[in-house]
Image (tube, rainbow, N blue to C red; front, top):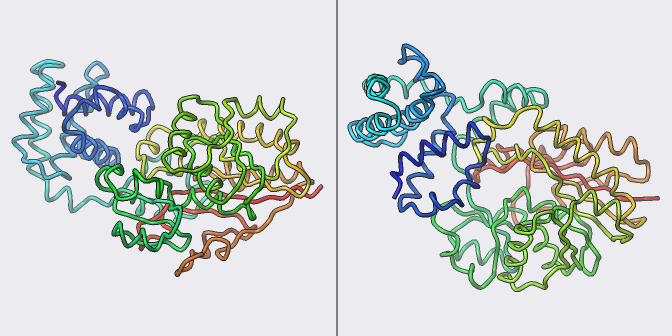
Length: 430
């Protein structure tokens, strides 16, 4: 079986060099076969959240930068420093393990270099930790945020992303009872929030299909639709099916469309576990479907393909692998989809557009541009009253002056924060 620390080094290199999501890699056999998955998960996520600080520390103690041919040693240094500084692994265990790995992978001279740097870090541990100011964002990602948010907002976002995100559940019935039963808290919209520990399959109510995992912010999109019962609703880009499940539970007739057969299979399995009626499933490219279909719907819920930068609390690698070009590419695709969407919505029908992106070019500015070109749509303003179904009030600053929803990581900070999400509700009036 692969050494867990070797696998951690290879995984970190894979994430940062090949711009891959950690969640994708965790599904591969090398990872699933590992007995120490919890340790690996904590180690890699800690390294990703603290990467800017760790690289600064290593640079301070390394006389030179390791060349690309010794990239394995570079990533080993990052993970070893993370263990020494943040995971409280005994220093000798860290040094022995990583120096041995580097010696096997590179050579004894590089291993000696790694050994010397790690010894210096271990000796200066207390001083280094006292100087840690919690920097999470590399400069390139910080500049992306500064285009859309104030300095204070960026600081609040950065602070809110330092810790692991909680686990949110959407419950079919009686969320108050399930919050108590599972030892969680009930959010104003009815989401049940738990500490993100253990396997969800082991939680009470999972096998019985009483609830499903869905972030608080994402759950608001389906809630924005007006009285979905008996309406014919197209869930566009639907997989893995959280919003489809919400609509089915509310009595809607749902058509779930996604481009991925595998993800639609997961959607169908999820709906079966939840003991909800199966939606009509269409496997197709959204653009192609909109161009060629003659169907008309009461409403469309478009969870548009996006940069996923709003999920940075759960996927800290995002701040290191996503660039301005990625956001521009997704914004262009969103615009193409929106240009085709009017023909499938009946007059008087609704469009709920949402993205899990923190970039306003994929949210506020995207919809503003759409409305300028499509006079047949008007905004239906959203407010806290639309979502505050249980005791407690959603923050007013989650709602823009235009009536859009814009959640940010520091919203609901007392309860554990939120993913960044954008939601606009529009009506086709002519």
